[in-house]
Image: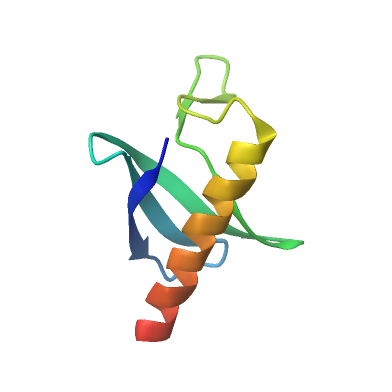
Length: 86
């Protein structure tokens, strides 16, 4: 599976730095990923939904850790490029 497009929407908030949408193989898109500034730097949160008990559950996420690492790298690279443009 190839990541064919990453769209970044910058946000000017303390922790939330951007929303990201990613497209796979030019045929499938996942919207609502978040770039978060945490205590150890930037990281990517998967799209999630609030459950009835108040917890949040990812509605889309990588199964393999290697793909999660690659996905985060691609999104954070795109985020940095978008920040440099502004």
